[in-house]
View 1 (tube, chains in turn orange, blue, green, yellow):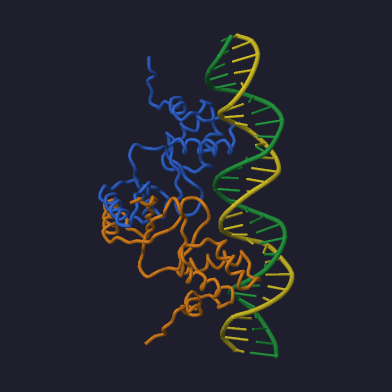
View 2 (cartoon, each protein chain N blue to C red):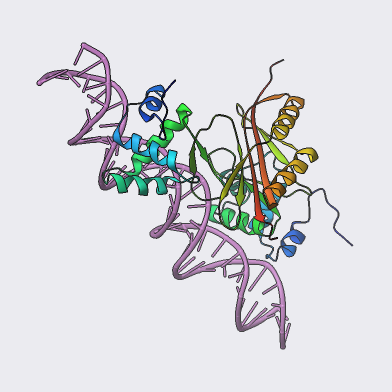
Length: 141
Length: 141
DNA sequence: ATGCAAATGCAAATCGTTTGCAGTTATCAC
DNA sequence: GTGATAACTGCAAACGATTTGCATTTGCAT
């Protein structure tokens, strides 16, 4: 049972986050949901504006902040440049960034996570979250 | 011959980096060398200004950039906030950031590095560099 | 429908960082 | 040393990314 769907329940996500369901927010959530990679605020704004020209960049930023705080999305800062966003998945994953194309590949490793926890514990800490980014180049074969 | 010293050979470091040995740079290098943690540009500037009030923030940034490019120092971007710097060590290390105090603890794990390389290889990549940051809280015991 | 807090757009403000320019300085050839 | 020259500096203005003040619009509970 439960709702099927090719596009998520944005109303519900906003409700859960304690946010009102507004047109800009629904549009932004859908853009993020359908996004190929990890778009930055400018890219999201560009797509949003194409759907509703009244949407402002400030609203994009405000929405990203609210959604980030509610845990609905995640903010990343790869290398320099602007922050990039993605909808929060169930389960954590890390990133491999292609230095030549900027492409971002996601991966996870239970082994690494386990070792991390072990290291933190040895130092007297418990991990709240972590960030692992591999920057690499395609091996030409 | 050869200057003794408890503080490193800043002249030499600059020479190697292909940079002129100037007072601002020597001061900045010494500040970084003696720094407890991972200071940001503002903190470095503050200390530098205390030694020579003519030093400007722009020079701090320019020096950090030049030294970073020459490999003498490393730039980090923990969480949000400004970039933080540290002198390049021999050998790589990762960071555990104390969420309550901002303190940065360094560590390394050959096991993690090995797994990283393995994962990258499986995805068709070779790692150029990586970033691993654990954000945690002290376990109160 | 009505009211009010929440959300929006716009423009101005802020933060961290970079840059243009005119004046200073380190280093190199004599 | 002396001078030439490119590197370096300080300053202030420019910059890109993000945030914010304020007047207006909107969602949503009544």
